[in-house]
Length: 481
Image 1 (spheres, one colour):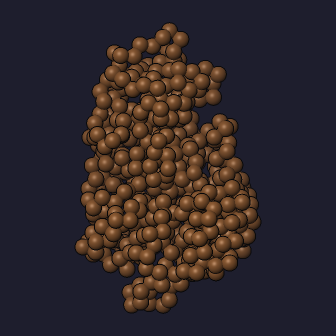
Image 2: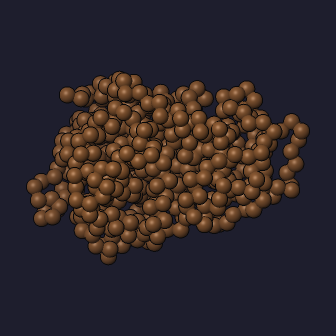
């Protein structure tokens, strides 16, 4: 399967309930309550705070600008005549969802995330336009979710090298690359599996000097013939647990490196205990492997499902060989792995591993926004309750990303990133598909606005994305040749 660019930026706008309101302004309307006091009344609130596992019935939420001021029983808060009021009609109010592993290429993808209630994303393969997007979103010049981005992926030569990776093959190159990314404005690094020990140690040292965080695949060292089935990895998975990863990505990568691709539940439980002892968060990204399986099972028909029109056309072109490969695989070729990744996720949860939600959306056939809902469904399929799955997508992810005092809960003083849905998501996780309203940093979006966001998500540009990728590759010293 040929290498491909896998850089996708994901910004998500959470929809806020279709409700009876005095007026329903456009998000960019002069009547929007960005700098006003306003009230969401008659809602059932999932505060997601202090693991209370509770729903606060018949509440009102008072917001001033982009901050939550009060959350109290509806009868206690009376709206002044000049306050903007949204009647939630007994629906359910949750914190905005968080996708901690996305790949973004173009502005329309920001609309896609929002349209599924994703209000914060972490882009996992940065280019200069992501830094521009972040500043424009923070300044209110661009509509999109809160954006965190790593720099370009740091990797070495090997079987997992991709064209968008910034290759570093020794300590000197690694140190220089980290310093370059810092000077360009990145504060978060992503590492990858082919890194040699020499290069990885240099990345660690320089990142600590500069105060940069690290996430990603666990580096394995140079992969000699026979690894992992007859030879050990050059860098053992357990050696890396003390290295203060913000999060380690992909259950399939953890099983490969941490378990030597051995689908053994007892070994998975032992590994989970070690991960807990080192307080490392895990991003399972179950949907990424699940989508490979579905493409194989359907002999490629899954590639035509609703929503794929929001995938970036430039990336779709790069993915063609991958599509052909997975479409030609035997339908049950990855069945045992799919089942084991679900079981391992349950085991990790049972042992107390902090699980957060990421999707690898924006590459292969992982649809921006929709993939997070799919990921939460897989969490429940794995054995978590709907509430526990929502915890992973709100309070857990917020805390791991260093945003635990700002988002992920409905609480006085927190930013008003909220979603309104029609049914109780603690009864069925599918209720998250009934998004009827959205608040992003205090900005109200109606059902009509959400429909508009979904339409905008389809307006991706091949040429604009191609130009940005080439710009990014030039900035990191790489090319598409």
